[in-house]
Length: 339
Image (cartoon, rainbow, N blue to C red; front, top):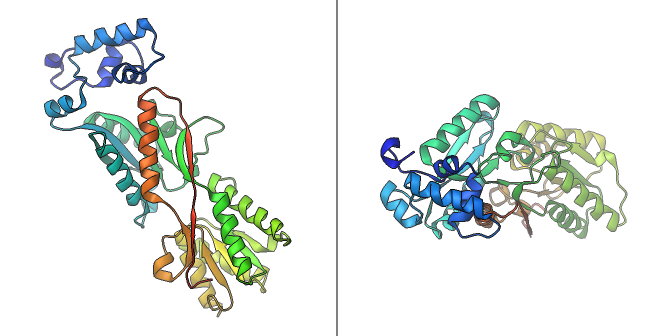
């Protein structure tokens, strides 16, 4: 392949095909990384000459009229696309970090209900933009399609993906610590029947939050009572129904930790319908802080911009040939009038 015969500027994937190696090997050679065999390095060098690939990022940008490109993938069923600004604050962090490396960002929304169609849609996007790597923001950490998290492209996921033991690069927050600190805060404010309304069973963030809640109650000398645990489906209706169940299971509950912004809104609606005042009768703490300011809700602040910046850092490490790694960021309790 040559630039003239292809009609476009060659990419690292063209070089990889010409050399018979992976795109990660090409990236390692271009970036001067170690641990590339002499044979592979020579094959890449020969392929660069044969394809006319331009090494320098700024020079490639001038030729193509754009910088090297990374795609942020919003992966969700279309009816579950984010209704909050949280993913876009992550994207803002990604864009800032990429700009420091003269790299551009584009966004792809894929509907994960139809796996085959989603794969084809993303592949068309990758080809159109010459994407070097993927930054995946799913609507739930357990909902990252295996084909996406295990893409041949360097990929970093927001949230710990559930991948049957396979190693993946990801950035998340300390969900155990978040639930632990919120439960302790509620106890220190005088609450003694503290419930947890969390997401589906066997998902990474829900399991970690449940563990943090249980450890906190044990450390505080409180009994673990299944009547104080309910699960929802991360919708407003699910949160409302789960909160009503909790009130039936334990009429004496005086505090609740809630996972998810939509479930928190539903839980608050259920408490209003039941005639329970917040925080007079029931203190409410959100394990996500999106509805916090508008509802005066105590919650866990997520460092959204930094999550994006760390995702880019891990992606650049993958492009340099490093192995996948994970980052777990600390969370911060924000006290408001709901507790």
